[in-house]
Image 1 (cartoon, rainbow, N blue to C red):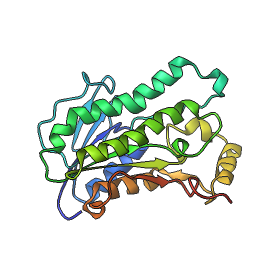
Image 2 (cartoon, rainbow, N blue to C red):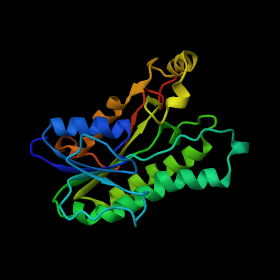
Image 3 (cartoon, rainbow, N blue to C red):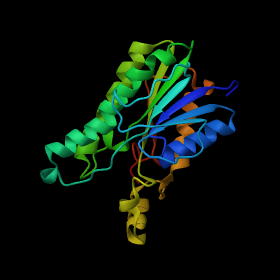
Length: 231
């Protein structure tokens, strides 16, 4: 990045968000965090909210160069055990929270001549994976929202998403809590590895930067090849 930007991250307590904040701050940017958790370090400004709806988001007056919505869920169940409550919860956190976030801070983005929005989708939105029905519904909506908003907000605001496969994080801890599970997950990936939060954060920071100034409306897979490769 050639000049300092002001970037707002929702879900700032997540490993992925904290990794993005480190990268952004190392490049000289101002990073503001919003989270439902307390005591999160590494941000220039930090706000605690009760949840990710319109009534909870803090008022921020300053112009914003970019915003990223990190909050998400991993709710894996056989389809016959997926309840309406599961689907509503996943949709509220992943989709409605993102919609409210964008609507709240879109005026701040419009104060800049060029700005960027980044969402976090999932490989499950484009690849059929067992037990992923509820999260696939939510992340599929995020992918569609990305494309729709990119068209609506062009040319001054770019909108993109990253679509990770499973990475080592607090959210995925239950899926990677034994050596057997880790080995199985590695074997399923074409690169034979599990990604890190830094892998995803680097892609997000690229999409926020001027280096991606001609990229919009894209769902960028950062997944070790799971989206396209069968090995």
